[in-house]
Length: 183
Image 1 (spheres, rainbow, N blue to C red):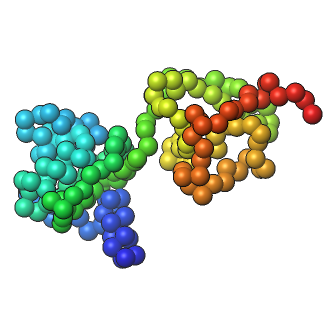
Image 2 (image 1 turned 180 degrees about the vertical axis):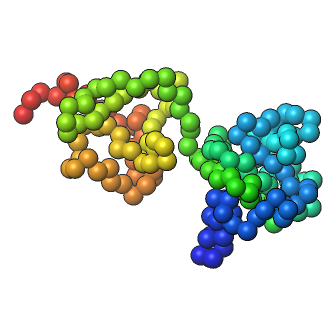
Image 3 (image 1 turned 60 degrees about the vertical axis):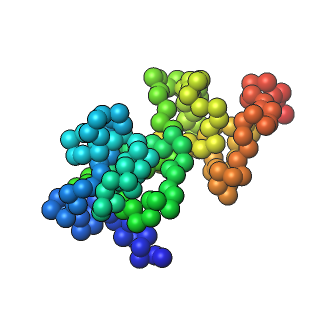
């Protein structure tokens, strides 16, 4: 339903009609700096950290079944499990805040190393060892980035039908550019 989807995007962006006064008093709060193990987790001063814990708590203990997301990027380490007991659950942005829910993994990058920055190239590298098994897609600051690979695609455009069409790194043999003999 386009109208429902539009309203959901509006509420998650925080620019909908939700105000502090219209938030249910029994709403469950979740924040990127929250604590799932705090004895009072879920209230505005001690929010949950994970959407799963907040969703489960709201489904069991909140008559309004409302989860309020505070600003920042909420990473989902696993799929958010919503079952029949979550029926009627509402997710809303805290007024004036713009939370983002991401199925990606936040990488801890200590530094970037220029590999080839001679025009027209702009290739940088970093070490993500131990953080992810593969990198099927890459975003920086919310923008999809073209991952370095060989051979290059025309005009540097990465084209695919989505993550389902990308080859997992452990199933292919990659040839480093330096080991390819000149044509």
